[in-house]
Image (cartoon, rainbow, N blue to C red; front, side):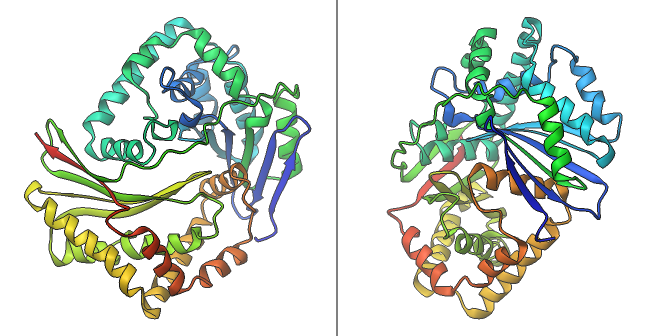
Length: 411
């Protein structure tokens, strides 16, 4: 299992990484494009996401229906997603249909139709998606949190963009953006499942143009300071207060990602976590409470989310603060740390049963130029995390001068 990750870089810059799982019949495939909000400006914010939508509306050889049926008729699936730093086009199929999946995904990113009627229809779809996000308090809160973590910076932009931007996008805008970012040096193919690496490489070579039309693209790495402090925002239609408290941290390749992963689970990873046991179980202030870690290339965020009645918001935040400061001041016991390590180990091992999760893991590692560690190496790094490392992280990030707190309240 530990020796089945293989990597190839083609002459034109395309990177291909596979992990063989000979005991399954599925193959999960991802085409990663280095194009996300970090590559946008205020005037074209949302174009990465809109382009992802448009690619599924049809190519020069396939209609939207043919794209959908091409894999679903075989029992497979196809999907797309856009993030802060990359867009991913993914498929899951039986191993015998790997060639069909590569053909469809390659056609999708290389031969978009960009029909004007399709564009107008899809603008309505994306605007409906924006409306939904603005009406979902948890999603809206997270968008606002990133905006405060990266003020006036593309990493803080809403992935969907604004309605005005979406309405303004032209066929030429999409064509230019795709030409700049959907180039070989910005492409990663990842696959996990019952897949032979060389056969997969050959399929990519067969279906992807080998022309080296590479582009430097646009990456805004100058990070502003986060907007710390308390931010109260009133929103129509809310029944509860929704709270996000967090801090900005380090990037994906920092070795502290192993201590912070354990700290994240310790504080907000499930029903046994400190925050859940205190804020929900002991005091009953919130139905939902959890923490999260998101490590990007040059920086990351750690945060907590909870929803509670408006009259309990201040008390819930105070309990949250006390738990974070308690970790900074008193650390974590060996027994508790051992329990958390066991929980993380179990999560990792259970995740190995999913070809889709493995595909995303190796694709993400490749994007961040992170080593493709063996399972044994990862578990050793988890095992070697000390209580002091977690305490040091808490002491570095958990104090009132570091916190950014956003509260969505009913109007």
